Length: 210
Image 1 (tube, rainbow, N blue to C red):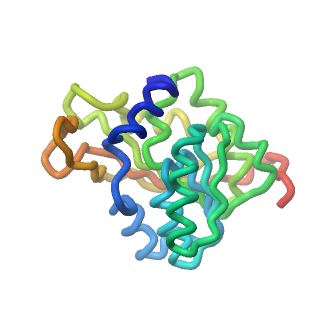
Image 2 (cartoon, helix red, strand yellow):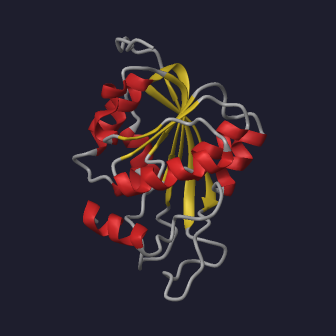
């Protein structure tokens, strides 16, 4: 799905644009699994980033759609949260020129093609500190075929993060989606997802300043 399609959905109703953070990330934060500074890669209108900021984290959010960032900045202002949300390409993470203790990905990884995934993973290695954690929530191959994005297998996650990473955990989860007339139909309780925690090993990647 191209940027025009994503933008048109934000102008109407995007099924992933819910009025609050994804429960999977709330549970991670409350369990202490998300530590320190955080990058929200593909932040959309910022609900996960704003939630983490409200919990005391230093958070940056990026998305390649200006309409999503504009919406997120308005939310941040209304809530009195100084979260830097910016338009940026997640396939060019090195341009952020800083590192984080954690990165979260809520529904971004599964939008990339096989050819794009290596660039994304390489960028993650540049912006995550050694032993930093990447928390990934993506569509699962256990979600029946139909509407929505590409389904991802556990093996695809392992293969993408084979070199320089340690897949600490992959467990079953679900996405919360918006409810509205004509909304896509998914599994009861929300589309089936994988929630993965992946650790960046110190494999000699030159750190960026920050």
